[in-house]
Length: 133
Image 1 (cartoon, rainbow, N blue to C red):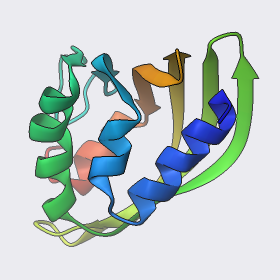
Image 2: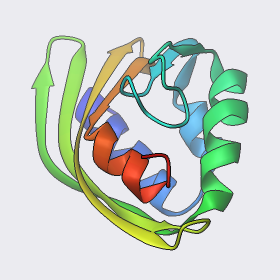
Image 3: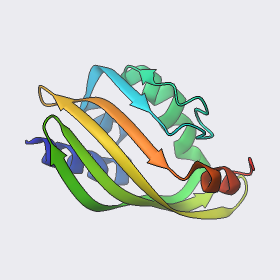
């Protein structure tokens, strides 16, 4: 599987709720960063390792969202990286507010594994949906 195929596979597995397959595609030392100001990690500091991603993001975010989806747009391949333009949609259960946000993901890969993920999103709008603004 080439880098673009691997990244698309991750989106597919995420859409199916298969967190184990998502984590399997990650390098053991993955650096996983959400945008600075993101309610789940306001500092933007990376979580390092599969377990940290599972505990601090996947297990927390999964139950809080209804009909969460990512619509993949343009996919751009670079040397050792894949950049994906997308949109997030869904309803944040605690506030019952909907989101429809433009987002960009930067995936870095080596040896057939994801070594780094960095998300860029309109955090002000996300904070408003999550009742933190």
